[in-house]
Image 1 (cartoon, rainbow, N blue to C red):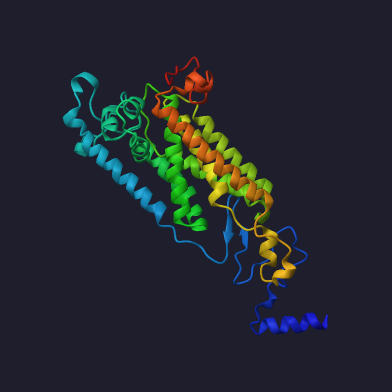
Image 2: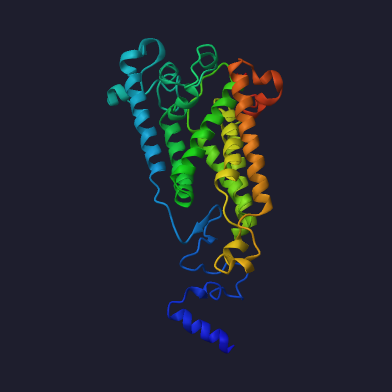
Length: 348
């Protein structure tokens, strides 16, 4: 007891060796308070573990939001409904007081947006143009296009809610890579299965961030205080969003492709040191007895890297050969639209 008190006295004078004495033995359910120079993470939300040492300043996600909104304004200027739309045949433009920014008739576009021909001209995802005209750039350009005000608002609000917090935790580089590669992964899967319609939107990239959140939780399991609650909450959110994708006019293949890409990237880019290593990191090397990462983290990293490379390679080869994914999976079209008595599907 005397030795312990002497140590605590030295700590009060600024000695850094009090790093483990701050933990409370009666509060074992929650992680101990971290020392000032520790990278230890504690959970303050059901999704993320928070770093008390460093929080990144989120600037990339706000810039992506601004870019998407600006791009939508450009789309509407190019669309110019009053000039390019024949109102006598197809109805009047909506909100004509906006001039060139007015929307197509709601019968044509219920999302308050441009015509499909405008989206196609500006880079919408279309199988024929990607395969027959060698316009692979559409796999990227479609991520920055949206079909209407409702579409862009829903996606950007989701991006703000999910992306800013992720960027604060992991920085702009990793979040940016996950966002873009997930968007491309969603575009590839969408093009393989949807031949008759165009596709636009950042939903694949957003689902990639959701997938990365899930894999980050799984691979960094030891640093979370409320593991079960975090996992159940996140799975429910993902399930609800994927379930919405079975409605008509929603490209669920982009959602699924983006989610799978982000899920694998989370194991690769969002791995963190295990809890036991964080506790012992300030002890001498010979007494730590804990590796920085667990065996499972290494295994997930290797397996995810292999699956990610293989998935992109196979998808791109099939796409460039002009193959139809539905020929290899006769039931997969139900993943994007389930026909009912109220609507029919034409997504093959």
